Image 1: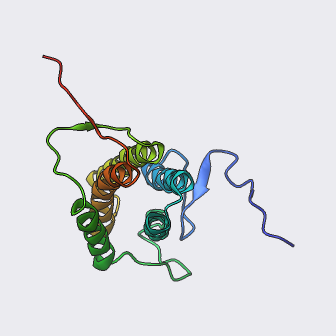
Image 2: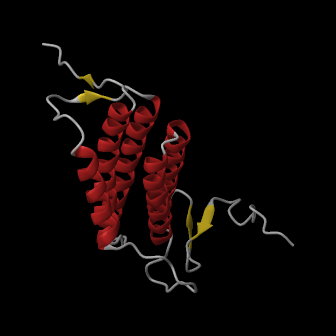
Length: 186
C-alpha cells in the first residue's frame, strides 16, 4: 500500500510532534516550523523565476537546511526521537556568511535604504527575507516561553535573512536591473 498524505489524526485541531507528543495546531512550535516551511516554498518560487544555476544551487543547499531546521522545531525536546535527525552545524552559518561576502564583493555600496523591486525574483527574495524574519521572531518567542530552540537555528535564521537581502540586490545587479532607493518624504 502506498503512503497516504492524509491521516485524519489532525481533524480535531491537534498534530503530532516528532517524539509522539500531540499539541494544538496553533501551538507556537507548529507556527514556527510552518513559517520555515513557508519560507522554503518562497525560495522555490525564487529559483523557478530566476533560472540561474549557481544561485539555484545555493538555494537548494538552503532549502535542505530549512528541512533540518523544520525537523528540529517539530521535535518534542523532552522526548528522544526514534530516528536519527539531521543537525545544523556552525559550518552551515559560515557557509551563508561566505556566500554573503561573495555577493557583497560584487555590489556597489549602499548609500540609502532600497525598496524591494528591480527584478521579479529579487522581489520574491525580499518576501522570503520577511518570512525568514518572522520565523526568527517566532523562535525567539519560543525561547522567551521556555520552549527549546537551538542557538544554531536562531543564528542560521538571522544570517539567512541577511543572505536573502544581499541575494535580492545580487539578483538585480546580475540581471541588469536597477535598485530603487528609498527617498524619505520631508
